[in-house]
Image (cartoon, rainbow, N blue to C red; front, top):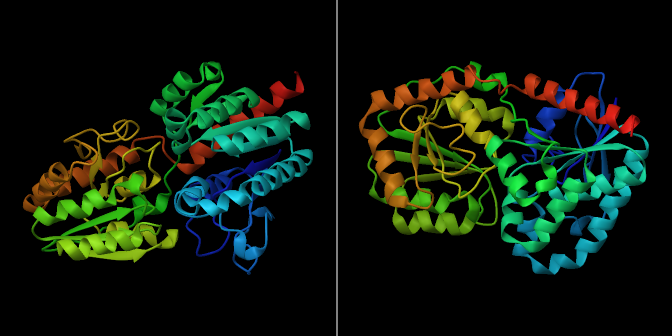
Length: 386
């Protein structure tokens, strides 16, 4: 089977951190599936460094190719730099042309996120190919807040024969926004790599070692976490990630005088060891589909403190596999952090329970890829008989 996988987030280079979870899915599909990744070029001069088949489309001079593969994706780049809207028509036209070309050589087109899904679905319709789309959370949140994104989501649902979400809760939100999805939608969670479950943990230290992983944008709530440290004792925070809020967050930590170390973006291969060297993982987001970083931290045996938000509450049970707090509530988060700093036995018990929960779950990349393959085959067979 030949699949054209369309995404605006993908690790084009060895040190890239964009779209790692999509690369993991591609890597775990069986050899019988020939995947071509259709994605925008970036501003780097070196060629994509990957064992995947990648077709990068250009949408301007190399130095201008900055819309994709960044923290928060295309919407965040447009918000930060409104002048980039001038590139958007060229970007979308180039994406559509690239999808048409790839669809002609494929049996199925797989879009990721609603905008890509709508464009890829239209290209598949015009070339008489099967198409599926994965909705990953941020696109559905935007559809709840914007009429334009809601229209794009509904077009995406209309144009694709199968709709995939990364959690059950996200599936229900999608149906509420686009009722036409009912009957052709299913939830397939992302997987966790075995390295996270197999890396030995380092012994606890005299100070609580806390880690947060994510794009440094407002939606991730890292400012809430840094503010929470103001009222904590014996807590050291490491922040992994990059993004437009990096400098303001550093300034905030400096003003508050809290113990924060900014590590920047880290290669995914280093994450199992980094998480194994952490006592607590904090997810302070305001919304998520189903956080890959959270699943990896649980698999690594970190005690979890997370925002009580839809999608996360499907994974973390308060006081059993982690601790929850109201999103944006720095005081509540501070109390949970201090609770673990004062009670090492509770911290260890929650970390063990989190790891066991992942070990007993079906959240493995081989199983995730097998479910995608079954859906691909179903979509292709239905298209052949249409």
